[in-house]
Image 1: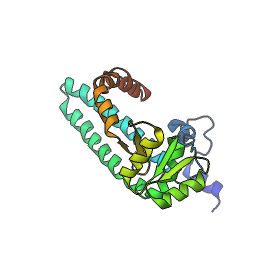
Image 2: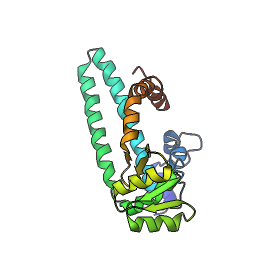
Image 3: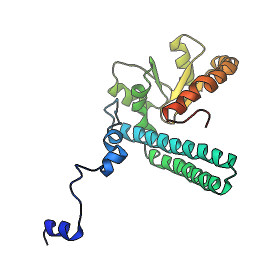
Length: 213
């Protein structure tokens, strides 16, 4: 049976030039071309897609929470509970999605660090990772430490300050020296004010959500 006969028998539509297609409705061209790796590393695409999809799920979660608040205010509890149940499922989706990123081992992730968050000094707490970084970035200042405390010491020494921070590119953890932690604690009230008044409203506007929602 020819393709033309199948199309004729099923009444399938093949020409969408005058209609909105599936891809047009979802803006797939923009979505699927929104990944722009900065490094030649194969694993960076996984890193980007993981975080972009998480942002989309969080956008939907905030959308549902905002609507649930309005439903509760209108005493429409049944609909609100349905929306909150959806939020719960979204949270589960966010948690399980990290299982995919977990397939990227620390040595896989380490080379991405200098590309995603360039620093003057790179400290590797694993000799194999350090050698890999030197091969990839021979022009960078890279030191190899045996453990995290030594990495902190090297970072503080090379930076010339006791207020040093070490970003763990493998796990996304931030470690800092005690003087820097004490300084940040002292600044906490001002930082909290800025988050509430500037940064959080900006974050919500980026997702087309009202800060009052």
